[in-house]
Length: 399
Image (cartoon, rainbow, N blue to C red; front, side):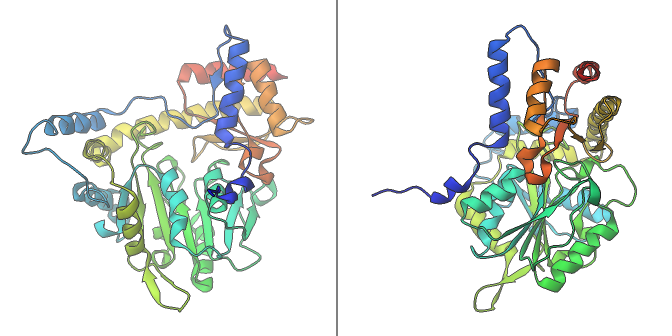
């Protein structure tokens, strides 16, 4: 008789962003004449840059000619894209990453969810709280329950402390989603040193590195000596280049990163991931990779830096509106997210409902990111400037 994977029973009733979307939809159905400004899901609104569009168009034309037509892409991504990634994202920063250590994929969400398949089911996890839900849910689906949650609250400046018990697999995201907090070089070095000492692996989500503006904030964990022996890094074009609907990202697994089996024999995680990808994925379409190449050119970088600055200014505007309400917040400096406290007397879901009904603004309740998110709320700078300004005008009326 067929049976379900009962690990799914341990998940929350519904995915966070599904639930917020459901509540917004129900509100709109009851109030069809009210325009809701959506600052919840971190979806981009600005169009793809000219350099990206040029790459997409060129690839479309090439696909219509027998001599340049492309079939299945390489499992790890086309070499032309992996080469330019190495040059612009790493070697330009003095980091020696090779094309063979880069795997192009359809999204950091998928990779951060799937990477856990490389590791034993009985490992101990250390995951920050609050946290992007996929890190937790993907491990629960796999049956893992040895999880130490690392509180990130105002008292710790929204930065996690080291685990109290030895951890095997550590999830870090900086600049952080949802808090918007960044980590400096000294802070990140503590984690690399810990992982080297404990023979652990760090999964470092750098999806928002293009939003870093302050000096002294690492753009890659590989800026820290020894990180190539203990860390996997995830990068995404979703928020850096507007690829939320186009889908392209990449994961870095250095050749030096090894992990043992139960007999103590060490294995290359790079080779294991290639084996996994070649079995479960047929890669990213040629057209998409040609568009992504346009982002990594000098012209493309400049074009997209302006778009990122636009979103950062949106976040700054939202932050000023939150401050006018007398609420504390962090983020908005090296991140498009504002992580704010909720008004006294309300929990995060109650604030969600109040903000939706009274100001017609949709955000994301902090408790959906973990227990330490209770009492907080996430707003995103992704949106049209007109909507952002109007949202702030509505916000100040919440009093």
